[in-house]
Length: 168
Image 1 (cartoon, rainbow, N blue to C red):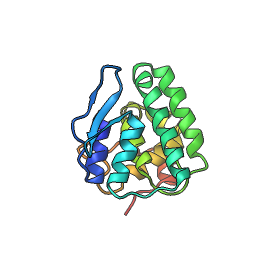
Image 2: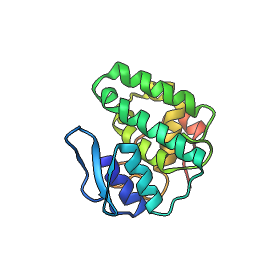
Image 3: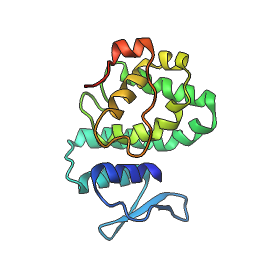
Image 4: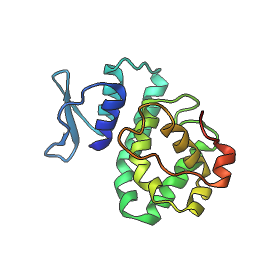
C-alpha cells in the first residue's frame, strides 16, 4: 500500500483510499471507478497524471509490476528467496539502464520502492554481487522526488562508485 502512496506523491496524483478488498486484492477508487490490483493501480495513476507509454511499454510495465507484487512479500520474509529474486532483476539490468529499456518509467519508481527494504539490508559484499541492481537503485534515488521521505540507500562500494559515480 505504501508504494502506491509513494507513486501518487511522485506523480502528484491523488490515490484515494488504498485498501485490500474481501479477496485480498489491493484496491482504490480513481475517478469514481474501482481499480483493483497493484499493477492496474500504478498504471492508472500514471495515465491519470499524463504519463504516456507505448503499448509495449504498458505491457512490459504491467508484467514487471505483477512480478514485483507476486514475489516481493515472499522475498521480504525469506532471505534466500530475496537473493534469488534480486539476482533475476540484476540479470535484467545487466544490459538495460532501467527495467523497461533505457528510459526511466513509473515502473522503475514503483520497483525502487518495492525493492527498497530488500536492498537496504544488503551487506557490502552482497551489493558487490548485485552490482546492476545497486547501480540502478543509486541512479533512481538520485532523481528528484523519488525517495520521498525515505533515506537514500547507502550504496557506496568501490565497484559501484566506478560503475555509477555520484550524480551532480
